[in-house]
Amino acid sequence: MKKRMMALAMAAAMVLGACGGSQPAATTAAPAAPAATEAAKPEETKAEETKAEETKAEAAASEKGGMEGGTALNFTTGGDQGTYYGFGGVLAGKVSETTSTTVTAITSGGSAANIEALDAGDAQLGFVQSDVMAYAHDGIRLFEETGAVDTFSTVAALYMEQVQIVTLDENIKSVADLKGKNVSIGAAGSGVYFNAIDCLAAYDLTEDDIKPTYQSFGDSTEALQDGKIDAAFVVAGAPTTAVTSLAATKPVYLVSIDDEHIEKLIAASPYYSKNVISKDAYNTPEDVQTVAVGAVVIANNDVSEADVYNFLYGVFEHVDEITAAHAKGAELNLDFAASVTSVPYHPGAKKYFEEKGITVQ
Image (cartoon, rainbow, N blue to C red):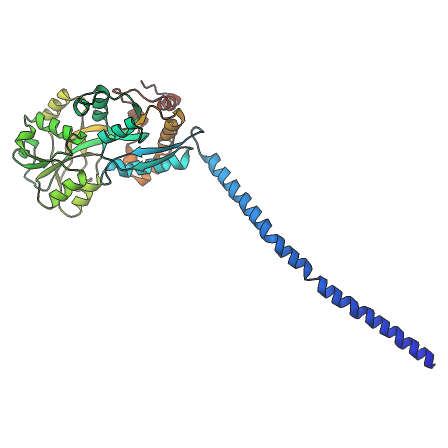
């Protein structure tokens, strides 16, 4: 019996020993699996995130239209108080967002400076008044001394730029009333300068019949506000930032040009057309009749067909979005865009317009 009891005790001890040894082994091994999983998880997550980013980039690229192979372009516009810069920034952003071409809008001295920048290769796209581009192409007026410039071509006409004769004096109602007054007529040799000279000539006035100053849009409106000048010529799409800012502080008046003098002006300079500035532009007492020239985008002839095609694609395939961002978008029109006759169109522009059933020169 004693031997039997001892045998049972030894068996029990063996069982307990086996159970006790198995539990610590299991307990030690269990945390090892989660530790291995945690170590691998960041690498898997990183790979998944990278793949998601690549997929997103591919999807974004696939959503872009136009032609492949676009490059980066500088787009010279105008002063930061003018329509060229504000609208140009919107256009540049939309083209960059929707095509393989990246466009950066930069400030500049305006039309003549933009042509010079393209000719020098410092920019690839530029805004320019339709009359100034004709002067450059033909080597007249602004470009009489330097000669004709043949390194650029037309991309598109986008909207009309009104000749705005701005004053705070409600008694100045006609160009004739500018005689003897202090008048800003734009920077010396600028497109605005020649617009002012043309308008004065229609009323048989010259630069000598006024007291001229030569200022930018922003400087002109500041001088008006400070009472240093009586009127200023501003040639830009209305409403223009500089004039809008002035109108927010004081009542603004625009000088009207009557039919007789508009006809005389157009007969002498066919670049102009009759135009009306709505009273809503600056909260003037009534609509104002004036003349306007076209705002045209030009490109250096060396710019690729794909880049110019993409510029037009980015603009004219997204007119509603552009209009939501800037009022000038409402004036975008394919027929008007293809209406320039003074300077030949770029091959990329020809390709885009031909696909729309429009033939340009």
